[in-house]
Image 1 (cartoon, rainbow, N blue to C red):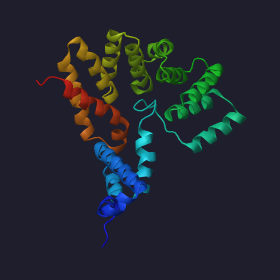
Image 2: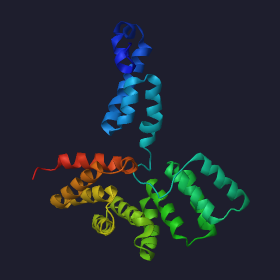
Image 3: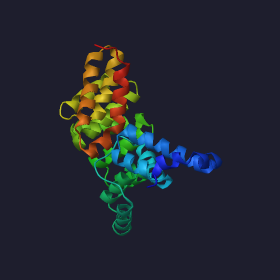
Length: 259
Protein backbone atom coordinates (compact mmCIF):
# COMPACT_ATOMS: atom_id res chain seq x y z
CA UNK A 1 0.00 0.00 0.00
CA UNK A 2 1.58 3.34 -1.00
CA UNK A 3 2.26 5.86 1.72
CA UNK A 4 0.10 8.97 1.73
CA UNK A 5 0.80 12.62 2.32
CA UNK A 6 4.06 13.99 3.64
CA UNK A 7 5.55 10.56 4.42
CA UNK A 8 4.82 9.39 0.89
CA UNK A 9 6.42 12.49 -0.58
CA UNK A 10 9.54 12.09 1.57
CA UNK A 11 9.85 8.52 0.33
CA UNK A 12 10.21 9.88 -3.20
CA UNK A 13 13.37 11.81 -2.35
CA UNK A 14 14.95 11.47 -5.80
CA UNK A 15 11.85 12.93 -7.47
CA UNK A 16 11.73 15.79 -4.95
CA UNK A 17 15.36 16.72 -5.64
CA UNK A 18 14.64 16.90 -9.35
CA UNK A 19 11.51 19.01 -8.89
CA UNK A 20 12.04 22.36 -7.12
CA UNK A 21 8.30 23.09 -7.25
CA UNK A 22 7.49 19.81 -5.49
CA UNK A 23 10.19 20.54 -2.92
CA UNK A 24 8.66 23.96 -2.23
CA UNK A 25 5.24 22.34 -1.90
CA UNK A 26 6.60 19.86 0.64
CA UNK A 27 8.28 22.67 2.60
CA UNK A 28 4.97 24.55 2.68
CA UNK A 29 3.17 21.42 3.94
CA UNK A 30 5.72 20.93 6.73
CA UNK A 31 5.47 24.62 7.70
CA UNK A 32 1.67 24.34 8.02
CA UNK A 33 2.00 21.03 9.87
CA UNK A 34 4.36 22.53 12.45
CA UNK A 35 1.99 25.48 12.89
CA UNK A 36 -0.98 23.14 13.39
CA UNK A 37 0.93 21.14 16.03
CA UNK A 38 1.89 24.35 17.82
CA UNK A 39 -1.76 25.45 17.86
CA UNK A 40 -2.91 21.96 18.91
CA UNK A 41 -5.20 21.73 15.89
CA UNK A 42 -5.12 17.92 15.96
CA UNK A 43 -7.78 17.34 13.31
CA UNK A 44 -5.81 19.55 10.94
CA UNK A 45 -2.60 17.73 11.89
CA UNK A 46 -4.19 14.46 10.75
CA UNK A 47 -5.30 15.88 7.39
CA UNK A 48 -1.97 17.62 6.83
CA UNK A 49 -0.14 14.35 7.43
CA UNK A 50 -2.24 12.29 5.02
CA UNK A 51 -3.06 15.05 2.56
CA UNK A 52 -1.08 16.87 -0.08
CA UNK A 53 -0.41 20.52 -0.89
CA UNK A 54 -4.14 21.22 -1.21
CA UNK A 55 -4.66 20.37 2.48
CA UNK A 56 -1.85 22.73 3.47
CA UNK A 57 -3.26 25.51 1.29
CA UNK A 58 -6.73 25.05 2.79
CA UNK A 59 -5.25 25.16 6.32
CA UNK A 60 -3.38 28.35 5.38
CA UNK A 61 -6.62 30.06 4.29
CA UNK A 62 -8.89 28.76 7.08
CA UNK A 63 -6.59 28.85 10.10
CA UNK A 64 -3.17 30.38 9.56
CA UNK A 65 -4.04 33.51 7.56
CA UNK A 66 -7.38 34.03 9.28
CA UNK A 67 -5.90 33.86 12.77
CA UNK A 68 -3.94 37.12 12.84
CA UNK A 69 -5.84 40.30 11.97
CA UNK A 70 -6.01 43.75 13.49
CA UNK A 71 -8.83 42.48 15.70
CA UNK A 72 -7.44 39.06 16.64
CA UNK A 73 -8.31 38.43 20.27
CA UNK A 74 -10.50 41.55 20.43
CA UNK A 75 -13.82 40.17 19.23
CA UNK A 76 -17.13 41.91 19.67
CA UNK A 77 -20.15 39.82 20.61
CA UNK A 78 -21.67 38.44 17.39
CA UNK A 79 -20.56 36.74 14.17
CA UNK A 80 -19.50 37.83 10.70
CA UNK A 81 -20.27 36.39 7.29
CA UNK A 82 -20.90 37.43 3.72
CA UNK A 83 -24.57 36.46 3.77
CA UNK A 84 -25.22 38.74 6.73
CA UNK A 85 -23.46 41.62 4.97
CA UNK A 86 -25.77 41.26 1.98
CA UNK A 87 -28.83 41.12 4.24
CA UNK A 88 -27.81 44.25 6.12
CA UNK A 89 -26.94 46.15 2.95
CA UNK A 90 -30.42 45.39 1.63
CA UNK A 91 -32.06 46.56 4.86
CA UNK A 92 -29.96 49.74 4.86
CA UNK A 93 -31.00 50.42 1.27
CA UNK A 94 -34.69 50.17 2.15
CA UNK A 95 -34.73 51.40 5.76
CA UNK A 96 -31.33 52.83 6.63
CA UNK A 97 -31.87 52.91 10.39
CA UNK A 98 -29.10 53.28 12.97
CA UNK A 99 -29.25 49.67 14.17
CA UNK A 100 -28.55 48.24 10.71
CA UNK A 101 -25.59 50.57 10.11
CA UNK A 102 -24.21 49.66 13.53
CA UNK A 103 -24.61 45.91 13.02
CA UNK A 104 -22.92 46.11 9.62
CA UNK A 105 -20.07 47.96 11.34
CA UNK A 106 -19.78 45.05 13.80
CA UNK A 107 -19.50 42.56 10.94
CA UNK A 108 -16.73 44.57 9.29
CA UNK A 109 -14.98 44.98 12.65
CA UNK A 110 -14.94 41.20 13.14
CA UNK A 111 -13.43 40.82 9.68
CA UNK A 112 -10.70 43.35 10.48
CA UNK A 113 -12.01 45.85 7.89
CA UNK A 114 -11.70 48.81 10.21
CA UNK A 115 -12.18 51.63 7.69
CA UNK A 116 -15.49 50.16 6.52
CA UNK A 117 -16.53 49.54 10.11
CA UNK A 118 -15.76 53.14 11.10
CA UNK A 119 -17.83 54.49 8.21
CA UNK A 120 -20.80 52.36 9.29
CA UNK A 121 -20.55 53.43 12.92
CA UNK A 122 -20.39 57.09 11.95
CA UNK A 123 -23.57 56.72 9.89
CA UNK A 124 -25.27 54.98 12.80
CA UNK A 125 -24.26 57.75 15.21
CA UNK A 126 -25.60 60.38 12.83
CA UNK A 127 -29.01 58.76 13.31
CA UNK A 128 -28.68 57.93 17.02
CA UNK A 129 -25.81 59.58 18.87
CA UNK A 130 -26.73 58.12 22.28
CA UNK A 131 -26.72 54.40 21.55
CA UNK A 132 -24.22 52.80 23.94
CA UNK A 133 -23.51 49.77 21.76
CA UNK A 134 -22.60 51.91 18.76
CA UNK A 135 -20.52 54.32 20.84
CA UNK A 136 -18.60 51.44 22.41
CA UNK A 137 -17.98 49.59 19.17
CA UNK A 138 -17.04 52.76 17.32
CA UNK A 139 -14.52 53.55 20.07
CA UNK A 140 -13.09 50.04 19.86
CA UNK A 141 -12.74 50.45 16.12
CA UNK A 142 -10.77 53.66 16.71
CA UNK A 143 -8.65 51.87 19.30
CA UNK A 144 -7.72 49.06 16.88
CA UNK A 145 -6.87 51.79 14.34
CA UNK A 146 -4.28 53.08 16.86
CA UNK A 147 -6.32 56.15 17.80
CA UNK A 148 -6.52 55.59 21.54
CA UNK A 149 -6.81 59.30 22.37
CA UNK A 150 -10.04 59.49 20.33
CA UNK A 151 -11.37 56.22 21.72
CA UNK A 152 -10.81 56.84 25.43
CA UNK A 153 -13.44 59.58 26.07
CA UNK A 154 -16.09 57.57 24.22
CA UNK A 155 -15.30 54.45 26.24
CA UNK A 156 -15.30 56.42 29.49
CA UNK A 157 -18.72 57.80 28.59
CA UNK A 158 -20.16 54.31 28.07
CA UNK A 159 -18.54 52.82 31.20
CA UNK A 160 -19.81 55.74 33.28
CA UNK A 161 -23.36 54.82 32.25
CA UNK A 162 -22.89 51.04 32.45
CA UNK A 163 -19.68 49.68 33.94
CA UNK A 164 -20.48 46.13 32.77
CA UNK A 165 -21.57 47.09 29.26
CA UNK A 166 -21.17 44.33 26.66
CA UNK A 167 -20.23 41.79 29.36
CA UNK A 168 -17.16 43.83 30.30
CA UNK A 169 -15.85 44.20 26.74
CA UNK A 170 -16.19 47.96 26.83
CA UNK A 171 -14.23 48.27 30.06
CA UNK A 172 -11.54 45.99 28.63
CA UNK A 173 -11.24 48.34 25.66
CA UNK A 174 -11.02 51.29 28.06
CA UNK A 175 -8.19 49.57 29.94
CA UNK A 176 -6.34 49.04 26.65
CA UNK A 177 -6.81 52.67 25.66
CA UNK A 178 -5.54 53.84 29.06
CA UNK A 179 -2.50 51.57 28.76
CA UNK A 180 -1.73 52.74 25.23
CA UNK A 181 -1.85 56.34 26.43
CA UNK A 182 0.61 55.59 29.26
CA UNK A 183 -1.90 55.74 32.12
CA UNK A 184 -0.91 52.40 33.68
CA UNK A 185 -2.51 53.07 37.07
CA UNK A 186 -5.91 53.71 35.49
CA UNK A 187 -5.50 50.67 33.22
CA UNK A 188 -4.67 48.39 36.17
CA UNK A 189 -7.75 49.63 38.01
CA UNK A 190 -9.90 48.99 34.93
CA UNK A 191 -8.52 45.48 34.42
CA UNK A 192 -9.17 44.62 38.07
CA UNK A 193 -12.74 45.91 37.71
CA UNK A 194 -13.25 43.62 34.70
CA UNK A 195 -11.83 40.59 36.53
CA UNK A 196 -14.07 41.23 39.51
CA UNK A 197 -16.96 39.91 37.39
CA UNK A 198 -15.29 37.95 34.56
CA UNK A 199 -12.34 35.64 33.93
CA UNK A 200 -11.29 36.70 30.43
CA UNK A 201 -7.83 35.59 29.31
CA UNK A 202 -7.53 38.91 27.50
CA UNK A 203 -7.93 40.76 30.82
CA UNK A 204 -5.67 38.51 32.89
CA UNK A 205 -2.75 38.63 30.46
CA UNK A 206 -2.82 42.37 29.90
CA UNK A 207 -3.16 43.03 33.63
CA UNK A 208 -0.13 40.78 34.22
CA UNK A 209 1.84 42.74 31.61
CA UNK A 210 1.18 45.94 33.56
CA UNK A 211 1.83 44.44 37.01
CA UNK A 212 5.31 43.13 36.27
CA UNK A 213 6.98 46.53 35.68
CA UNK A 214 5.57 47.85 38.98
CA UNK A 215 7.02 44.98 41.01
CA UNK A 216 3.89 42.84 41.38
CA UNK A 217 5.24 39.74 39.64
CA UNK A 218 3.61 37.28 42.05
CA UNK A 219 0.12 38.51 41.22
CA UNK A 220 1.03 38.64 37.53
CA UNK A 221 2.24 35.02 37.60
CA UNK A 222 -1.00 33.95 39.27
CA UNK A 223 -3.09 35.50 36.50
CA UNK A 224 -0.90 33.90 33.83
CA UNK A 225 -1.13 30.44 35.39
CA UNK A 226 -4.92 30.74 35.65
CA UNK A 227 -5.07 31.66 31.96
CA UNK A 228 -3.06 28.61 30.95
CA UNK A 229 -4.93 26.30 33.34
CA UNK A 230 -8.37 27.43 32.13
CA UNK A 231 -7.35 26.95 28.50
CA UNK A 232 -6.57 23.29 29.10
CA UNK A 233 -10.25 22.66 29.93
CA UNK A 234 -11.88 25.22 27.63
CA UNK A 235 -14.28 24.30 24.81
CA UNK A 236 -13.03 24.60 21.24
CA UNK A 237 -14.63 27.97 20.50
CA UNK A 238 -12.94 29.54 23.54
CA UNK A 239 -9.60 28.00 22.63
CA UNK A 240 -9.83 29.64 19.23
CA UNK A 241 -10.80 33.01 20.65
CA UNK A 242 -8.16 33.02 23.38
CA UNK A 243 -5.29 31.40 21.47
CA UNK A 244 -3.37 34.66 21.13
CA UNK A 245 -3.66 35.37 24.87
CA UNK A 246 -2.62 31.88 25.95
CA UNK A 247 0.50 32.13 23.79
CA UNK A 248 1.33 35.50 25.35
CA UNK A 249 0.72 34.09 28.83
CA UNK A 250 3.12 31.19 28.24
CA UNK A 251 5.85 33.46 26.87
CA UNK A 252 5.47 35.93 29.72
CA UNK A 253 5.43 33.27 32.41
CA UNK A 254 8.67 31.78 31.06
CA UNK A 255 10.32 35.20 31.35
CA UNK A 256 9.50 35.51 35.07
CA UNK A 257 11.94 34.27 37.70
CA UNK A 258 10.99 30.94 39.26
CA UNK A 259 9.33 31.14 42.62
